[in-house]
Length: 236
Length: 194
Image 1 (tube, rainbow over the protein chains, first blue to last red):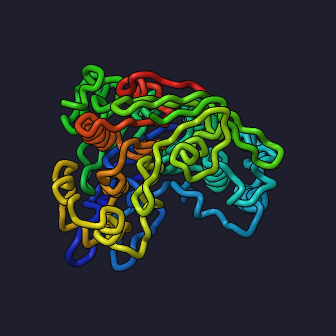
Image 2 (spheres, rainbow over the protein chains, first blue to last red; image 1 turned 60 degrees about the vertical axis):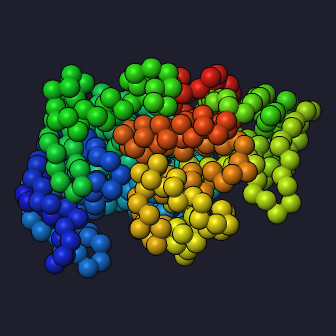
Image 3 (cartoon, each protein chain N blue to C red; image 1 turned 180 degrees about the vertical axis):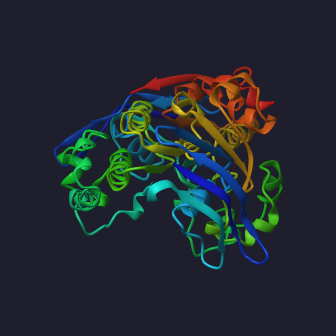
């Protein structure tokens, strides 16, 4: 279990992330939503202990029994360009030991991914490699930053299903940062909403769908194209 | 009119064939298909950047020294701008004047952000600047290649609101390439499925 108490990112003059408190249990999927620039990725980095240069990390992140955390970053630029994907994943797997092999069937990594270099992967393949790396690195807490951005519907669905399985079957605590409410809500147990570096609320998918949440949160739901009021409503 | 009939491109041993496309001015046409079928290649061909092979095709003529009448918007605004130039330099370069200034307000962009470089703006803001850069007066068609895939739903709705209003006002033809069937359903006159 991960307990976050008053986590913040600040410099003397500017606050990027105002103190945030929440918890993430084993077996739970916590969704994080917010507009671009609301501090979602900053939160992920802060949980890994990283802050932008010139800023200070405040508050505490307590992981019970030293639960390990791993981050699947948004961009494939974190993969080593000079090593085969397979070799990087083996390194991650070594750290996890025996459990890696049971997790190998997640994210379907075939030779078409492991025997290639970063620049030879398509967007979808790179996402799967990043997910696999994080899931092999961490035995307790996994953070996925925009796991499905730019993927087609089926590929995105497969990744979300794998994330849900990791939580349910392997009892990982999974935090998913996403703006794709359509795919996030079915797998999330709770949803944290951020706006301008502050928490708007902690709510649940059912509350969002029903509109029993903050007005700002509900706007993300009503802004989905299938909820636009009529065709070309946008032209108004 | 933008037209492609029996288009194909050869990449080594691989042959990519394209669906037939017809896009008139004032029309919004959607294109959907799985990852990797060649949607971005199609966008490049229609923008006249990737050489086109087809039984029949027509693209608007590009006047010498003028911007391309078919403007291609890519998925991530972050990669569309030169990281070393300010937004003002980038926009001035394509417009050759500052007539774009009134557009900024329509698109909810602050004119003071023009002095910033791309890494000082969010993805949604950059994508709007990217669109304004493409809306030079000579533009007749816009090819939107997953332009809102990286944006949150609120920003996405606002982006399309602005874009469709401009397309309507200026009688632009818009080709929308997207994985999101609901988005295509909501904004397109018709949809071409790969």
